[in-house]
Image (cartoon, rainbow, N blue to C red; front, side, top):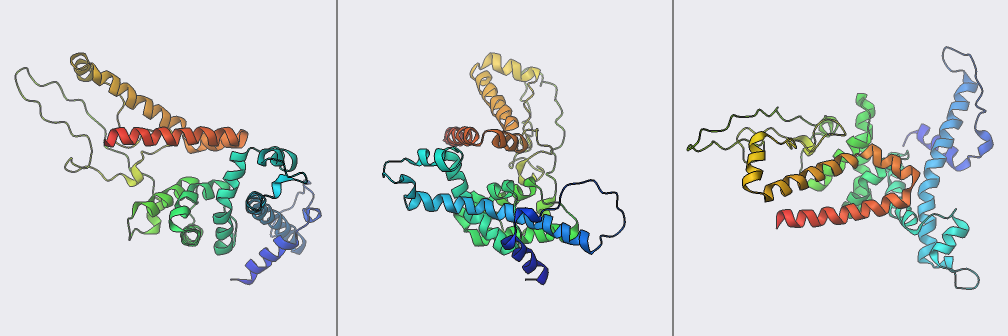
Length: 302
């Protein structure tokens, strides 16, 4: 641990709001002088204090729930009544989300010696339940250090790539690969229908059993609003003819198209914006989405 890190953590513990410099316009250039450097350190102390306080909220909520301290002087108060009285009326689902995240957030703060953004913690929290907070925090710290050393931003997508890697069972991948953008599939070309009475050659779909199929890094196409890599939702004339002959295909194509629309609507940036506005509603809806996703997979795999 460096002396600079110790100083930062000490500042976070000793922080008081009055230390934040007043936000006034100053026309200054050149290197920071000693006073400006002190002001910047206090700004960073406020940042670290805020992030640390967020995981402390989760621990405090869990302590109140598990020790049943919420029940009040008459012993009759419910959890939600307690949250209404003491926690600005947040819902139980929002409280349990903070409880679910605080251990990993605290471990990252300890391991990396800086707090992680909420979106990064949420991307990794389910992995930590399987792998343990210490292991996930070590990976996250290595990811952040690698990004800093090589001038690469650790975005939410990069952290999602890390989560996918840790749950894949794969080993030996260079950490730099987590920063690589996903590879696009080759463009699809429509083939003319085979003459009547002849057998049409099977069309390559870019799947694992197609020779020369491109490797899809993390299975996603480039761009947040695109469909999963290799998935073409357009319907050709030959597909329409197939639907006429086998009507059930039309329903199946419509179901796949609906899944693509759902994938687009659940783009991480949109979900994060919705979570800021209505966190309890978003968590409820995401819970329903997970449940239906499991049911869909059961039918597809069955």
